[in-house]
Image 1 (spheres, chains in turn purple, orange):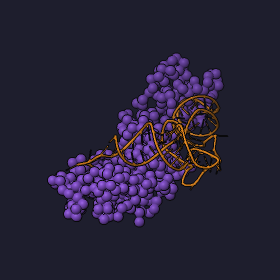
Image 2 (cartoon, rainbow, N blue to C red; image 1 turned 135 degrees about the vertical axis):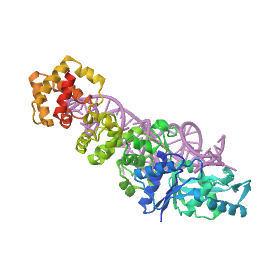
Image 3 (tube, rainbow, N blue to C red; image 1 turned 30 degrees about the horizontal axis):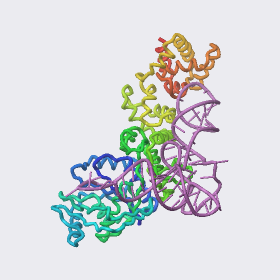
Image 4 (cartoon, rainbow, N blue to C red; image 1 turned 120 degrees about the horizontal axis):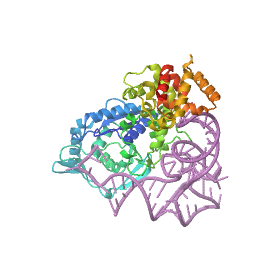
Length: 427
RNA sequence: GUCCCCAUCGUCUAGUCUGGUCUAGGACACAAGCUUUUCAAGCUUGCGACUGGGGUUCAAAUCCCCAUGGGGACGCCA
């Protein structure tokens, strides 16, 4: 059976690159009906923190990645690592240097790795120094405990970032010395920033959590990450996790480093938001709305759903929603100074608002069809363009020059409030 | 410096393994237009790439070599 693992170190948040590694391992397991194991690499007892681990697990779940069984903690296995090192020293394959256990590397050998993504990689042991197995403080080195645990967990395929290719021959040496079965390896290229440098904060954030907070949908982030280094072939781009499980083939992974394009991720996020059900968006948007000053009380579900259906096509990130729609939920909404100056600080603007609001007042039915009819009729009679009425009204009612269609907006806000705002703006 | 990996539009990529159907396809971004009450969406069009040089072959984006460029690793970090 296929068995893969993801081995985060709880010394920080979940990096977007690590999330991608986890994602492809998970996909590989799901694709072939295998198991996906979590191993916590907490050998650095000083830097490892519980809160980091919790956040990593939260992020994985958020992305839709689940794991089999309980995670394995390396911090609980120091004795096992030491025993293995001890054995190698006793058999002459290693030596002591103070408290440390060092592995002796046999020179002049070629180590071949048949990488699932890169193909054959050959390294000469002349380029590998003797390797520390157990450090002077008693903790194991990464390469050593990694091998012991991967063998213990019976991992069949190790899929990880390219930054590990140089670790692989070292680890193979350990597998051989310990008489353990060597798994298959696949190294995927790293994600870079737009400028080709290592992905960092200035490229839009490296923590999965940051994207969650900024209002990216997990489906969008996963879809985007999927496309970085993998393609099912052809023109397919919008792919769900379920579909990816069916389509995934590690042979389709590219050996090329890809640059992280925040613009494309954001575009994709907008696509996912627009296609989401209003009711699915509601719980995600509600908390963000309540958090902004002025809204205070919890808006009604009915009102929220109406506004969501009007605005979900206009936002690219969930975080944009509150600022664009505050006028539906509060009378202390934000206003654009420029819009006010242009449309309602002028005499014409005020005249139009007075005239239009008095016409609206006479309506019993405040549906968008009726209010639009009133607007068109007024335009006809006064020889004004409809836009000349609409623009000042929009600013008076919403404080903004952009947004949903004016008449739909007015219908949602309601007659009394609309008239009040218009009169107030007209002075 | 040494070792390893990689190379198609600005970016992500299809095509490369199994040379010919590629005057290289799609998406993001950008530009123009249509639609239109604004914005967004939508539709149409445009811009835009096989890193360079040698081979192999009737034929190369596709195979080989070299150069160049990019990345990674050389920790008693993980």
